[in-house]
Image (tube, rainbow, N blue to C red; front, side, top):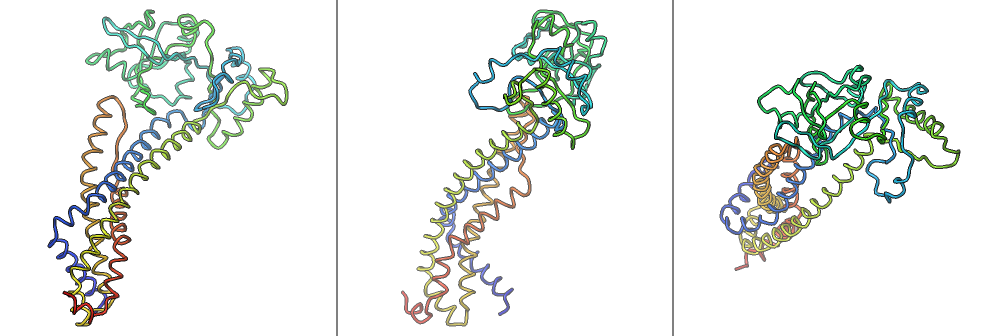
Length: 414
């Protein structure tokens, strides 16, 4: 027999054995089904979270620096940074006049517990920012309706604002918000624009924001705000050069003596990306630990069932070997039976995971999140490969034992 015909015959015998013991085969797949289901859901969620995170964090720009008092994603004692000196508008002006590697710069103020109201509707916990015309470029924003803040808005301190898409849809579901008056912390502001949808980042809704001229922020919200200086490099490849120049100049502006540590932080998109990568690693480790445990239990079940199957079919193995079947044919037959059982379990696991992941994405989008639980083709392919490989690994010892049987002893078996 050729190798192709041997494989075909082994596959037919394996399928027949599985069909003849449906209940036993079905019960054997449970551990593998749980493992593949867990692996598929974890992979799907990580994939969807990664895509949503990349879309949301890309708006910050990989070539933008944020100079502030506090470092992002730091787990050190907060008291280390609490007593740092404030960053002032005068320091921003001096840094702007001395920078040579920045394409554009802008100061920024923010408050995270502002309230915005329109008629009888009120939203609390709104992210309120004081921005300038340059902030549109630095933050990578797109205006969906109306316009962005102008230089005259900032210089004259006009009470105007730009709303995030979530606020605009909540207050004006069937109307154009441009030209309407809203109250920000009970001060009236005219809506001049609406931002395009940005989505959420790590559970934080970026569309729940309002932007006002930085001069109005100083007058209405906080007299001495804690400024953040945003700096956009001339080109992405020159970010490190821009960072070093900004650090050196800002140390000089804040009169920090040589050898003393910075009393400010220069943050980048990279800090959030590293934090998210660590979060994904933890989630993946937990998910794959559960997966490995389930597959191990399932593999033990497959091995036990194949040992039983080999014992039940000892005479069949003896007859096949007496008729000329080679060891590799017997080995292939039982390996295919084990792989067939686990591959069936993989298909069931993927079949259960698909509607669950679709429902997770639907619920997230209904709650205003752009998270998408994406079941990509490579996740399905990997899940099926792992399930088949689990069966072959678990079934190797019983299959090897069957292939090594002496045909005379096997024929004597009752």
